[in-house]
Amino acid sequence: MTMAQALISPACGPQITFSEVDLTLGRTRILDQVSFTVAAGSVHALVGPNGGGKSSLIKTLLGQMPHQGQLTLSWPGDEQVIGYVPQALEFDRGLPMTVDDFMAAMCQRRPAFLGLSRKVAPAIDAALERVGMLDKRKRRMGALSGGERQRVLLAQGLIPAPQLLVLDEPMSALDEAGIQVFERLLHDWRAAGTTVLWIEHDLQAVARLADQVTGLSRRVLFDAPPKQALTPDRLLSLFSIHPRSESVA
Image (cartoon, rainbow, N blue to C red; front, side, top):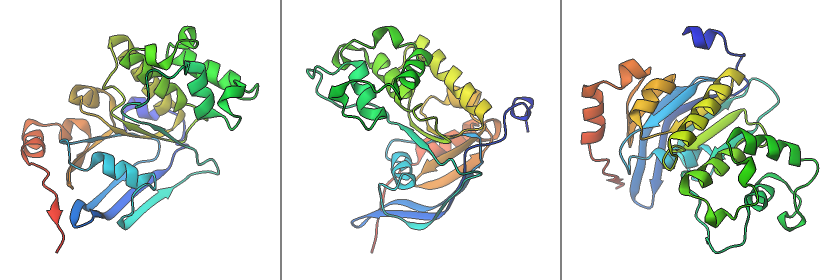
């Protein structure tokens, strides 16, 4: 345990255990006997080549894809809120949807066209302020830069406060200021004991920020702390193996 880990709050997020998880679509095996554990309250990075099954594993965790094997979430308390931040937001940029409209649609049960409810408005204000987007809340989503839209996605992932947060390449569209915002959020989640499962292609960021790293290319090739995981030999093995999906007989 590092000194930083010793100073954080007790974990409020779950331990996640993947045990011999297989995912097959049609006759194609996407994941093959995937086994590793995400420690409660940790920042756990998932790295690997495109097509290696990272996003499919996330969808399996979120219950969006059927699988074989065992997937267990061990929650430490009654709160079981899962937040999800996708890699990108696909929508018609011509839609007259403001940042406030988007947050209302994502974060409250009240129809978005009725505006922000008084109950959720303070949480939305706080979330937009944390990601540096409070002053752009009346801007149309289609008029924002890719990095600004990514910040809004991070903001919606904060409401309600998650005990488990799943991030699918959240840094992909961020500029330098946005990256600093993300790193502050990651520090806050760790301090709060939130479990974070984080797909990321920026290996320097993973080395700096993650507690544990799993290399996935259809199978788990390594699972270790960053210093042991991100060695030249292991990365060469991970990214030189083309993640060809197997046909199931």
